[in-house]
Image (cartoon, rainbow over all chains, first blue to last red; front, side, top):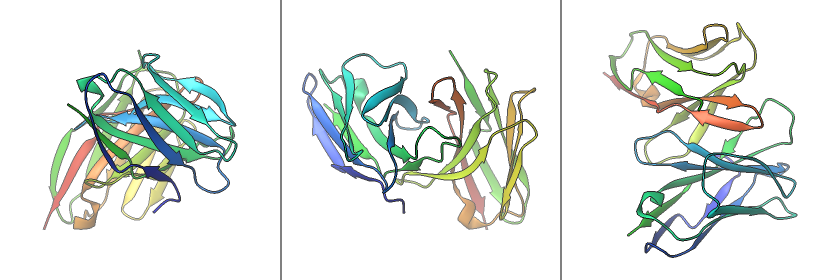
Length: 114
Length: 110
């Protein structure tokens, strides 16, 4: 197992609500990336944070937002939840901007929107 | 929009057999990653390929990258049951953006 942890493990929300997911990166890692993985699909890149600043963003609407804290842990916030937001949300941590981007994934948060 | 296509999507193979999973992508990136995902689990990094012609091997798995053909392969030698999982390739594009394929679900039958 990696040293990346995520909370909560599972979450059920109603359409229109807001949700916050949390990720603690592996020790020594200062970069966190978030992914959305719908059932039967590959992960889709949401955004990445490096030293508390957004460092790249995928094709997701602004209602998906994030934060990274001084200890490099991170939050993913989703506003105005839609049914299609139901998915496994993965965070991955890595070390700096130096390639290769050896990413270590957390166990994920399973979000269900009803 | 960058596309990453894997084939086959589903693969059932007998123990001891060899097979190859293909990953085609539509960008000029020379950074390609392979991951493994077990049911209900997260992603495990298998290989990082950073240049044309790169080849890496770990146990019964070998990955290669041909950036001119925009193709990576994951070759399985003498499959064993423990290799049953879903395998994803991912291409890094531009500014730290990673695009994953749809995955290949591998089942190794005794």
